[in-house]
Image: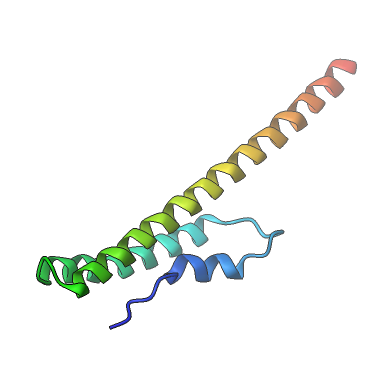
Amino acid sequence: MSLGVGGPASLNRDKLSPQRRVTAQDIDAWLQAARERQAPLHRQAALTPWDSDQRQEVLTVMAALLQERHTLLQEACEEVRVISAATRVWSQGVRSTFADL
């Protein structure tokens, strides 16, 4: 049984060009897809014998999905930081322009 890793998040990320901003709809779609992918894994982990290879495989996939979420969260935080810094610079420029008037 192959559960695979890379699910919806990696698919969505592959579609995004570096010039395209992530939208709220992108995030909502990814979160919904992640929930749909995670629910059967939780059920399967709960129903498989404790010491089975299948349970280990399910837990490995779940760990990979968590790592993927963590990476995407880090990327989103970095994007917010960059946008915030750019907005701060723009705002200071506007204030300076108005002060000169």
